[in-house]
Image 1 (tube, rainbow, N blue to C red):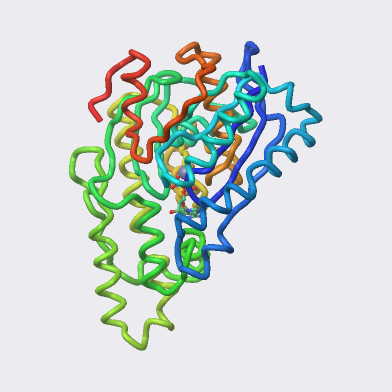
Image 2 (image 1 turned 180 degrees about the vertical axis):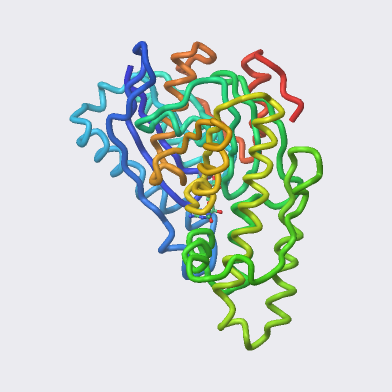
Length: 353
Ligand code: KG4
Ligand code: ZN
């Protein structure tokens, strides 16, 4: 069973072809990605209308190149999957519209996929795929969540951010330091040259006794430092970047370990854009090794948005029998869509989140 996946929720157009339906984990046949980063850079952030228009331009050529790379014909596609949400409404509509039109033209069923489930299952695309159950740390631009994952569609929220996401904390502090968009990778790069102990920054909710996060206060603390430094900021920028990154990573590591201990699990899966952060990986590797916990990450290039994770999530849902693709081509998108709704949809363990 060949699943074509289309991702268009934000600033990357991603298309991929995955082979599912076998006994093992579905396999990636080919993928292609176009990043809009350069286009949005001039504006300091994502401009939704420009994003939608660019997805329109990119999606079919990307699909053609994926089929060519996989040496497959468009008629070989068995299911067309697309990101149904969450994300930018206009951007989502492009992927959903193209997917449903393609499905209708080919007479093949379609399936709308939850973007975060795509991230969550993306480590299954790696050489060393995890096994259920595990604790997942989902750290993207809009979400920071710890979850207990017992199987496909069986997600129980353990904790989440009460304000900014970790990726947002990276992006907003990067902006305060004049590092532009996208901020996370830029801040991480500058931090390599700085002293992580140079500034004493708060670790919000680090010892709160629950598994929730809060990063808004950190951003305010960085702003205070920026104002204090004034003209000296330039000379201390790397130190401030390193100190900010250390604060964010400290909290993510502490809470991940707490989640593992509380749920008595020995497997951690990290997913989402911030999962590409080198310090986070080093620190989690060290802390987990000491506790005999296995950690799984997506391949670096599949940490941020891509089509492979959408095709993969669709194939895994279909293989697990938690959902059926349909020949209903009327589509909608869900710009706001809590992941906890998936567990309700599939009738498995209800989630308090
Ligand atoms: O998962 P993702 O591609 O998009 C969403 O679904 O939100 O995550 C993007 C986020 C951005 O906030 C970006 O700054 C952050 O991931 N990010 C990083 C790194 N690479 C991407 N943050 C820290 N270090 C990185 N190396
Ligand atoms: Zn994402």
